[in-house]
Image (cartoon, rainbow, N blue to C red; front, side):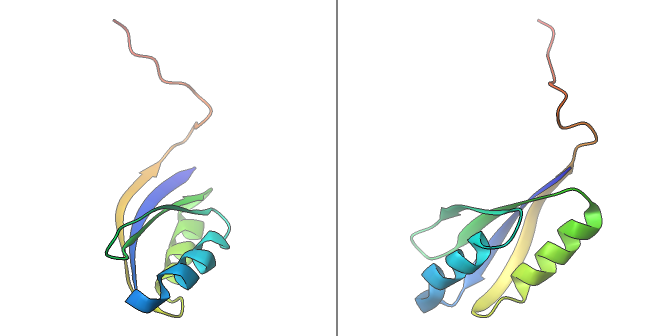
Length: 86
C-alpha cells in the first residue's frame, strides 16, 4: 500500500469545485482546506504506478495551479500492527 499527501493550490475562486473533483477520484481524500484556499489531500493506492498516475491526474485537473507531493510512504504489510516494547 502507498500513502501520499499532496498540497493542491487551485485558482482561489474555484476551491470548492476543485475539492469536489478531488473527492471524486478513487483513493483520494480531501483532508483539509486552509483559509487561504490551499487543499491538503491524501492518496492511497496499491502500487507506485497508481500513485504516479493519480498524482498526474490531480496536477492536471482544470483550475489547479499546482500540486506538490510532500509525503510518501510504502507499507508492505499494512494490516500488520506495529507494537513498541516498553
